[in-house]
Length: 351
Ligand SMILES: [Zn+2]
Image (tube, rainbow, N blue to C red; front, side, top):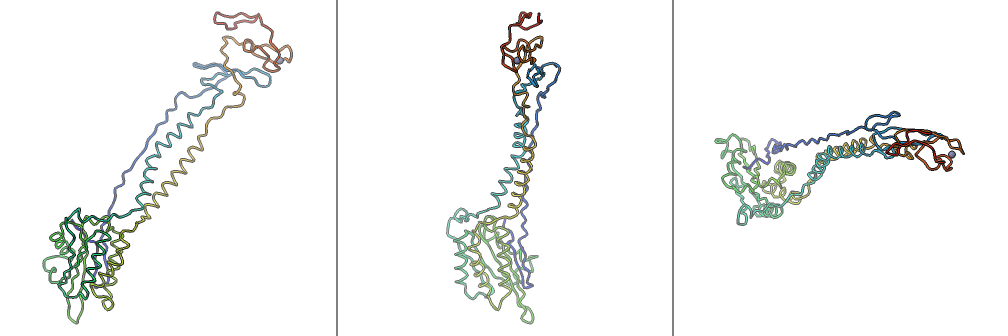
């Protein structure tokens, strides 16, 4: 169904189409759960599921019990936080990208042949006899159609034509539209006037655009057109009615197909993107991979059943029996020890 593209009157005011398209944005919520898994634990005393590690510090052996390899850094928390970030933020990243793309809209010329299989007929009906140069108006309408695919039509009537049977000129224009232009690719203008006492010109006009013109005749463009046309119609000493239409068609023909930048979308997209980057950056920065202490880097697994210490004959440094062939401090060869081993080869007693 066609809808008003705007209008105006002698009182000076022009009204916009009021067709507020409220787009319902779908709200995406991303979710991710972090599985903490088995927590990492180290202890100086054994606990279930632990493994013993040996390292040397200040010439002394140190034993530490841990349920993970203390020589390796734990990247799992770090990786998990990046994955969660990605999952949670992905819909927002997509949304901000959509906003950016939507911010720039290129109108596509309307294919008249898609709706009617013949060349359009340019309706100019001057029932008032106010047009001074119909040929020029028709030229401007044809050129507007060539550029946009929208077919303009201009009709003038007296106020008496509609004010008995219709509550407004808009209602009358609507009726004219649906009866004459079922293709919905026309842009109809109805200009109406009646000369009242004292030569007072009581005029009104109304624009009616078909649904198929919406991609080109967007609210922003049509509102600007409406204002420009009304400004000319108010200067009757300067422009005749048909001139006002023809000049405004000519003025807006090059504008209609230009890229339209929706600053609201750009603002929305950038605010979302900046917020996301900040939050993502903070999240990753605060979850740096766990670092391995220097002492742990040289640790070795120590699977002995029983742990005995002995001192090096050369440097006096302490070491764990059964773990080395040379002293871990000075490198001197360790003499074979006398000890008792169990069937698994573990030292159970030094003799
Ligand atoms: Zn030594």
